View 1 (tube, helix red, strand yellow):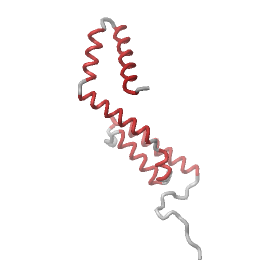
View 2 (cartoon, one colour):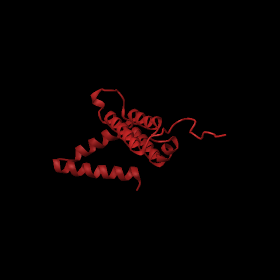
View 3 (cartoon, one colour):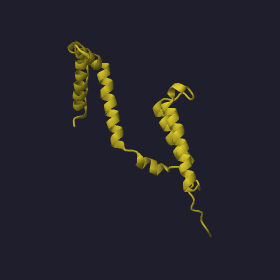
Length: 132
């Protein structure tokens, strides 16, 4: 008696490699247009929702398996981005960016000095926030 060993959930369809690459390219293109063309008002999605839609399409059509998708996620990067967004949100609530802009504008008298002070302020804030 033969036992069928197909995936019971049916994630990966039997498509050859070329078709799978073509489908992945089309899904990537659609996702890229949705992410970059927010002003077109084709489908009112923000960037994270459009990226999530692309990921769901990749898994549901069978281009990637769920296991491969989980392995492709770099959780260290996600935690770093989350932490940076939290710090930025708290600094924005504390009106730090307005304060820093006022200080830079107060001390700069010429456009050259403004550029210099902006570069120094950006470098120092990057150095303080990343701690590297």
